[in-house]
Image 1 (tube, rainbow, N blue to C red):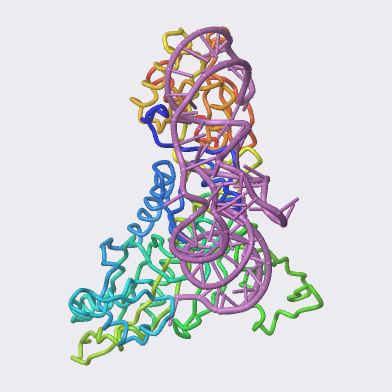
Image 2 (cartoon, helix red, strand yellow):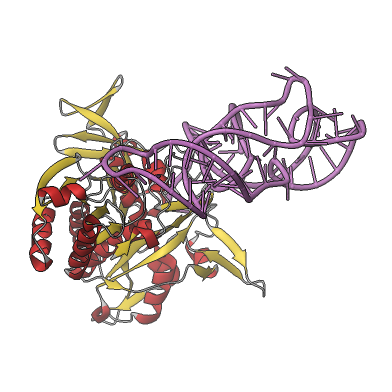
Length: 428
RNA sequence: CGGGGAGUGGCGCAGUCUGGUAGCGCACCCGGCUGGGGGCCGGGCGGUCGCAGGUUCAAAUCCUGUCUCCCCGACCA
């Protein structure tokens, strides 16, 4: 239940002069985010609603594979980072407390989670484990860019699996692949899972989840049953470069830019060995724990959704991400019959659990429509004088800006809610 | 880190070359009209011109230094 007359939604007619990416422009224009400094962004109320929708969706799928949610600190002692050899990373923020103790701001949480598992896991009976949290990451990026796409501080869902052997690791890894596939499908995004670059994380294998869009920083190669990061494809003997084109098995691969929204790494025992995370097996033998880590960036999912579905009028959310399901526009001034009808509809929808935002501001109709299309909620209901004349609440589906059959003004309470729910089911 | 660009009211900009005491549109506030695609009229509020120093009778404007932001590239655990 949200009335725009009381809500902080600072929409702008013009995008920031220096914004380039569509998601950057629209997130600012739609009043979702504001900038504090390079790579540092505040999520305003409507933006945070979207972010939290993504978070909740991820949470449900992580819990479904047995993930246990927890929370680890961002501010950490430097020592574990020294032990894993990552204290030297330039992107790692380092600082001291008043006593002069060395601290870091975590850029990811392998060290922290491994320290705790080392403290608490003693036996093979304690394994396997999937632990995860949603927590801020801090990275001293050389070049933040494109709004929320590449920032110095961002929330990540990172999970970590702990197993007694490589076979167990593969099982946990497969569970995550399934969860990630379901998450991506539920977001409504176009995405690909591609072979990833294991880089410095270790040599056991990795995958990346890529969402194609213009603002993407990476490039992927796509065939009928092939998808790979361009960097990886360059090392694949099956892929050959012919001039500008890439060929594989007689097929010309298409090339798209994409945002990396998630990655998963088989870590092996690199961190457990460095930090002493071991367990005893049935024969009383000590072994390092086999680990993997799995990241997902809610902010990048939000930005990718905007990039993929926006049109010249603004954002068009997939329904899983929309800040509100229904954007109810009231025309006419307070006290008029049409406004009273709109008030009643707002109360009915809210009471029925419909996620509705109500534009009850004293603004010109055109401005309300423009703001509604900028914000991009999947359904727009309009109630004005015409509604009273026709007996129908006007319905616009944001995706495609198509007029849907109107809802009868006579429908009230649960009946109205049911009709809106039915409409909702039909949306992308 | 290399290359390019930009800092003037909340947002978008002009003014800088040629120094003379800051302006436009939008937004905001007040009053009135209007009321289905950013409407109209009138009246207002709001700016140490990124910062510091210098030149000058006088600096948004010229000089020096510095900070910040954006874009391209490199990087991206």
